[in-house]
Image (cartoon, rainbow, N blue to C red; front, side, top):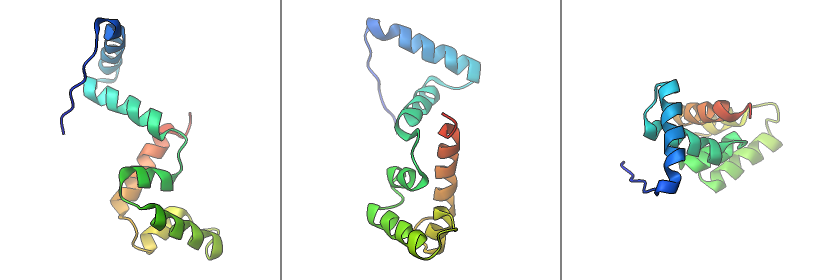
Amino acid sequence: MQTTIYYSENDTYLIEKVDRKGNRERKSRSAVILSILERYFESKKRLGEILVDLGVLSHSDLSQGLDTQKNKFSEKLLGDILLEEDLVSPEAIERALVIQSRHGED
């Protein structure tokens, strides 16, 4: 996917900050911008919310998993329940956990 970002001269300082961060972290401008967006939108979210945001889990399936956790397996992690119920793939859980771990210390 390709996205074009238009900015004015007033925004140049932000692009320069993005470029400096990219140089420090050895990332492209687009990778830095995406990481900033991910931090903004996914910070403080729980696993189920991130899975819904990723489009790999519906709200109703999340509710089903949370109900199962609450009523049957209070000690079991939601991710394990969602996997056992075949509601998400292991790759989706892994991706969501990576996103969550990046921002969990904020």
